[in-house]
Image (cartoon, rainbow, N blue to C red; front, side, top):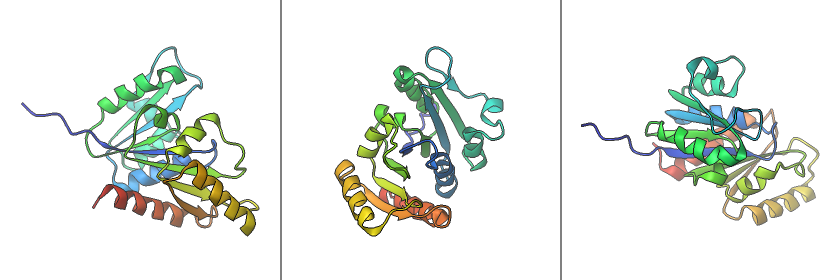
Length: 201
């Protein structure tokens, strides 16, 4: 009898706000790292009652969706956990159980509140003071913080920002860039950092 696949290595992409670039980075990491699978987590939005894990290929491949971007990036298996905050843990556990071994990229802050990933990338974008509530936990657990400093951030402000990030995410590496000009290079460096940290070839 064939044994079960080993548990996947989990990379979570979290962010300070909705428009920080979380979906773009998640798809980029799937492609660059050759992740076998991916999960999109939506918590607290419009959803049916109870925990819902969407695996229907037609719904996941709908044009313009984050799940379609993950599929287009090369993930062989994708799921969408679309549920209430109270049910995220149960939905996420069920989705992960159905994933193969290898690398798994999960997009969503609430994932960090329910599992311990092997690596957590946190994206920050201006205005920095507009953190959504789930971002505070995600930042504190970050291994790498990518900061889009496209707004008016002077050198004195930048030094202060670095200190604040260090206080909230003491173990995280920090990488600053200006979008869209430097974003591709920043994402490339992020992928390299994940690869080295997880010992990937």
